[in-house]
Image 1 (cartoon, rainbow, N blue to C red):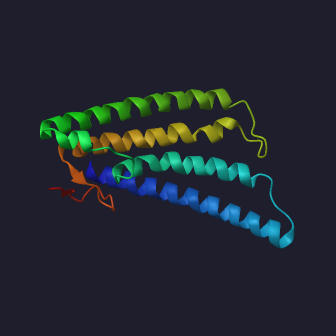
Image 2 (cartoon, helix red, strand yellow):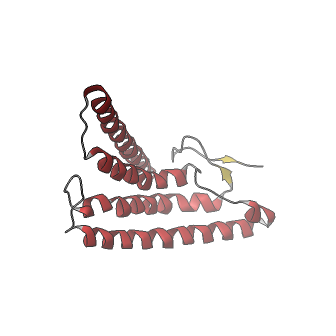
Image 3 (tube, helix red, strand yellow):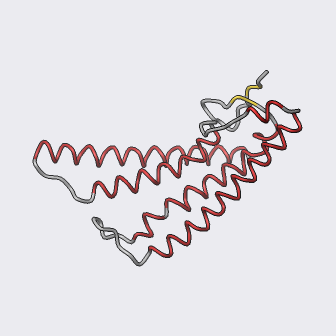
Length: 171
């Protein structure tokens, strides 16, 4: 299971890196073309926007794993350890229900937009909307693999979220 989790993290990081590299590349080429040669591509703005959305949705699960999402820990720290664990389980449940709902609505949104075309590229809108179920599905996978550790121990998240490393305990 740890190997599958490591592979998920590596592939997810690669996806986010590739998407952001693609955004950088097409925007850079378009800027050079516009200001250097007086020519630009009309589709770049739309493609960059859709790729940035894919990057944001795809990176949400990694952000959860690395402790980069907003968290208010005052209430769970004020009570007993059992109370803190119960609150963390509640947070996991709420995140799961929210992302599962977003996944389902995202699939419906893709089906709804599949027969409509985007303005600049002419591709089906459903392709651009795939960011929602892809990102939410990745988040749900990360949550399923990470939830028990999140709830079991109150720890500082590691900057390098390698699933094989042991979390650092807080005092």
